[in-house]
Image (tube, rainbow, N blue to C red):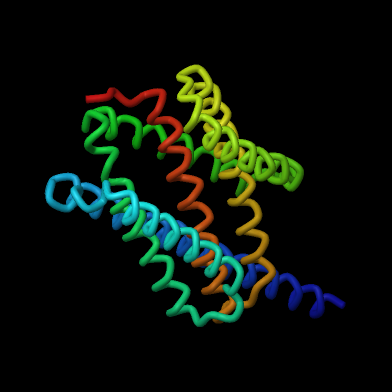
Length: 233
């Protein structure tokens, strides 16, 4: 019995170590993708000729459709894709998103972008740590936040026609709260997925998928905070 207990304890410890190692990779992949997005966005913004075609409605819509297709494709087919293909799709998304987000350097002051990024990083890190260590099940919180995301999208579309500053601020405030909650929920969910996966191709693909989810949480939290903290040019 003692030998059996020791074997189970050893295996549990090994699984925990593997999950911890893969969770670190999740954050490394996410950080790398954020760096790529930031560098691409800054490069495009500093080269005005790159922005002339970006503000073409057809090109902009095409980029948005490509982003949506990559996110849906990667999320839906993650178990069928090889780790290499999943990683390349994620990095391609980060590049395209960098092109799309280059416009923020035209709209907002560089100093306020940097300070908002710092606030976002601190907030994101705090909630990711909370989600990883808390024993409380955050499933209900995640479901509520995901439903709220749908409401945010609808409100943003409606405000394209209303052009209400008040509605924009309300939506931005709700958006910050929603993605703060989603950060904690996703961190807990990804940790659980990695804990249940063997150290193999499956765990590598889950790490890429998790990096994408946390990357999206970070970017959206940053954009909503920027509407409050950013100084327009």
